[in-house]
Length: 195
Image 1: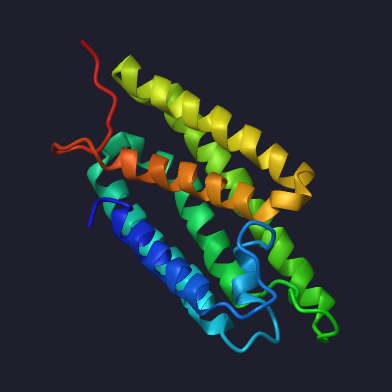
Image 2 (image 1 turned 90 degrees about the horizontal axis):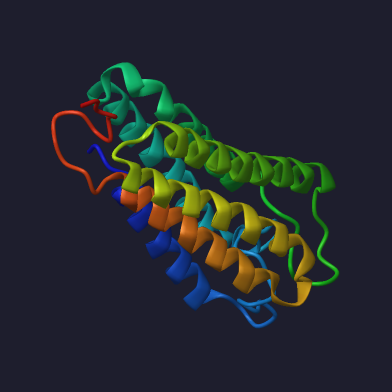
């Protein structure tokens, strides 16, 4: 497995299942994806399994890609940190979306930290590839992904009325970029070449 496609497929299946199983009070365009795995939510296990499985599969793919990438192995580190942060955000859950439910503010704070780290490391990963990948046409795609992820992340904090929808667009761009990384075949994955 030298692609992140399995990880993306895994989390999308669990996201869809969690969304379909969501109770009244959860609104996809308003509530965050993390709230599908919220504390004190009876169906949180679905999205938690999505987060944790995604993180594990990213680690496995990252290790395989490092082995195949030769001197460019380090480019997988930010992606693996992104996967690890998503995994940890599945262990430490967000605050409930339902009113009047008691929860651990400390755990919700940790979740917020890991979610932020996930965003930062995804931006770092796109930047590393934007600076090093070849041919130049591939770099353009990485720069577009970098700008889109950064811009949508900024909107996520300010468009509270559609925060859930904005986050889903952000995830779609990030996942599309991860899938793009696996579209090049050969003995060395996405390895810059000269000449």
